[in-house]
Length: 87
Image (cartoon, rainbow, N blue to C red; front, top):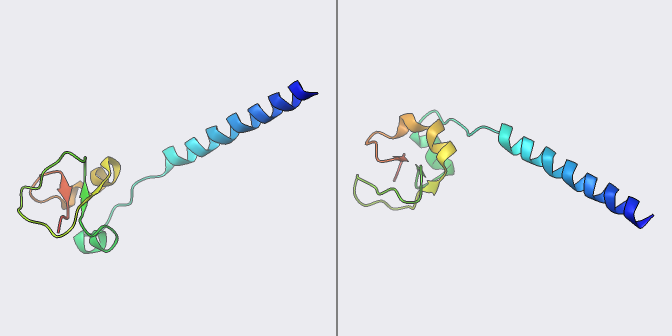
């Protein structure tokens, strides 16, 4: 009886994790219309990785790091320094 309940519990955990990972993989990064809209949510803009450096000079805020979000809003990176809409 203990083995059967252990197998059922293990199966339930495996199935639960597989569905939660599938949902995370299907969500897409939001594409913002312009920098004003993006900066309402991410004040410092969006960086592609944590190792990128700002070419434009001093900024007030630290950018949020997300490769997926940056790639979705790449059009807003005017100076091509891998930080979109930095302020």
